[in-house]
Image (cartoon, rainbow, N blue to C red; front, top):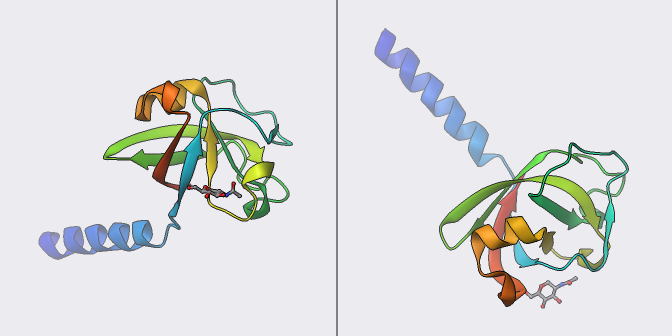
Length: 116
Ligand SMILES: *[C@@H]1O[C@H](CO)[C@@H](O)[C@H](O)[C@H]1NC(C)=O
C-alpha cells in the first residue's frame, strides 16, 4: 500500500513538471530594449527580462524563472519585459545572473533554456 502511494506521488509530480513550458533562446547581458514590469518586484541582483509578447500585461511578473545553460541552472526573478525580444524566446539577464552562466564579456549566449 505504502509503496504504491509513493509511486503515485512521484508519478504525478513528474507529470506536473513535464507540463511546464520550456523555451529556448539567446540570453544577452545588456538591458537594451527592456522595460520594468508594471509591478514592482522585490529587489534582487538576479533578474530576467522575458519577451513582452508572451506576457503583454506583465502576467507572471515577479515569478521565479529557471534558466539553464550548458548544464548550469540558476533561479532569477522575472522583473522586466523584453521589448526587443518580442517574437522570439530570447531573454535579457542582469549582469550578476549572466555571470553565473558564462563570462560577462561574452555579452550573449545560446542556447539558453528557460521556464517559469
Ligand atoms: C534571438 O536570438 C537569435 C540568436 O540566437 C537572433 O538571431 C534573433 O534575431 C533574436 N531575436 C530577437 C527578436 O531578438
